[in-house]
Image (tube, rainbow, N blue to C red; front, side, top):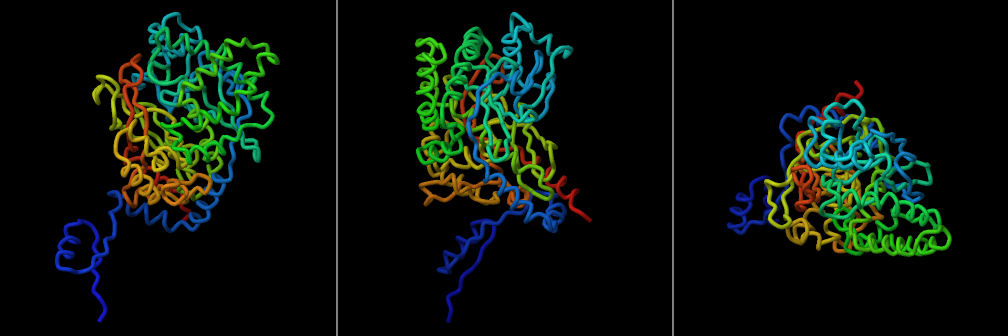
Length: 465
């Protein structure tokens, strides 16, 4: 006589009651879909294009290799003109802008000489007559936290040599009181001017003077084996970048006429800023995800971004349309005396890393990250495993040693998120809610649940009759 096994779904109390009677139990982790989505789920499931569309989108994404090919001012590579500002996240206007975004815009206006005092920029943005705001994503760029980019800021330039497609990101300022966290005091502006006058030109000379262009995708592959997850931990990546660029930086003393003291200052700045590589990881992820855009029928998310007020996603099968909801406040660890009441809701384009399958999706590669964002090492492992339930593929380049070198979960599927109710996990820094404060902590956050049913409804409306 065969042994009886009971399959249980839902509340664990039933499984425990059966086990208490010495009967074998097989638990099935099933959840009902998000409320009100049944019809759209059924409609998208019947789309004959979907399997092939998702295969093509994933294949295109995984086929990209990002190389560092230049460093140049945003005015040159993005065509930004005086008074034009880029920001993180979906589109927003000054009247709805959060404290850190306002602070970064105010500092950016002073940096560009539009005002003498950042405080005077409030009237400038309220009038809107000589300034404009636009998402970084709309110019093939990404910006961490507030993500503000002005014409004089220097940008990393990454290229997929197979297609010639390029993406861009500003240089990383470090942590604490920095522009991207909404700080704009004299120390912040002095550092930004040094980055524009010294660091940017020196990095340009180094990148142009390096025989082999730095393979950023390759560095990402290595750093995931070395304890980084490429969002809030970039220590190994930063050191590998320094390894690649420092010979040419030193060589620029003779070749490019740079002063030895400036080269030394630049090397100290990069070496002392563990987050420096983040601003290369982000455009590398965007370069890959942009290759998977605009595939009719694909349910793959190609961007997740936050402006401090709204959290938005874009999906391959729905073009450039944003699906937005209110940004959430992260849960985590705070600096000094700061607490949850001091934190602004989630902000930044850096969730592009999670969209590509690293960052919070690869927390199992970086168990030490829990010391920054909170949680436990088992939590980090469980998070990576859970993200496989809402993704289309694994990335064979980016593997997790502790999980038997399984590829990171890659290609968020809108329909899987809606069907399971599992939301993408993001680890992030936290900016102060008040303009000028800067960083107040770091933690974990998820998107607002309602944006995924919105995207699903738009996909369902596009299913051919």
